[in-house]
Amino acid sequence: GAVVSQHPSRVICKSGTSVKIECRSLDFQATTMFWYRQFPKQSLMLMATSNEGSKATYEQGVEKDKFLINHASLTLSTLTVTSAHPEDSSFYICSARGFGGTGVNTEAFFGQGTRLTVV
Amino acid sequence: RKEVEQDPGPFNVPEGATVAFNCTYSNSASQSFFWYRQDCRKEPKLLMSVYSSGNEDGRFTAQLNRASQYISLLIRDSKLSDSATYLCVVPGNTGKLIFGQGTTLQVKP
Image 1 (cartoon, each protein chain N blue to C red):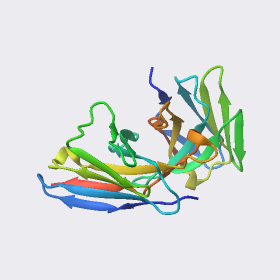
Image 2 (image 1 turned 90 degrees about the vertical axis):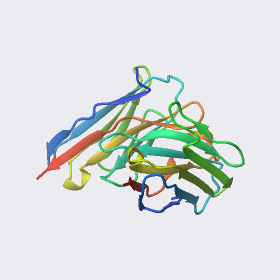
Image 3 (image 1 turned 45 degrees about the horizontal axis):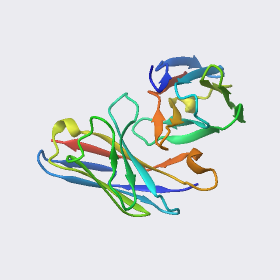
Image 4 (image 1 turned 60 degrees about the horizontal axis):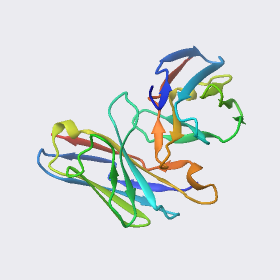
């Protein structure tokens, strides 16, 4: 199946610094990627939808100035957590979907996730 | 009503048991549904896709009831390795995926 690579898998940073997470689709072009965060024992919560060449669409309650998303190419989307605080510590996962013959009803492929710890 | 709703469990079953999870969804226009499996601290992995009335793959069977707006996942002959969280996923109108909160399964020896 399609492969989505996410990097880094784990990062520890100091409060106030920024962290960039990369998500790449390795064998297909992803016009749309999705960014999720997951707190312990909770489900994935969609943060934003990243569209190639345009601004991301953020879900209600997600600060777009804090979680900067860039989708500069059909294979790369980045999420930057700016001025990180301990409460930003979480598991961040990206996903990409193929919009081929089956249109919007295709499954999503997930990156390996990034465990962010802000100290 | 939540867009996608699951019983979080946990479901504790012995090896060899049959277990079933239900998932209800609110968007009657949804055409496809997915069950993902997520192991602790890992990314979700696709288990089954459901586009019509149901799907079967080995010990796993997914069924769709459009009238009542729910999908189910049946696992027969449970293995220890089936222990995980099972996520019900429904595409939203804009193509984004809506996740249920997940159902935790623990298979005991």
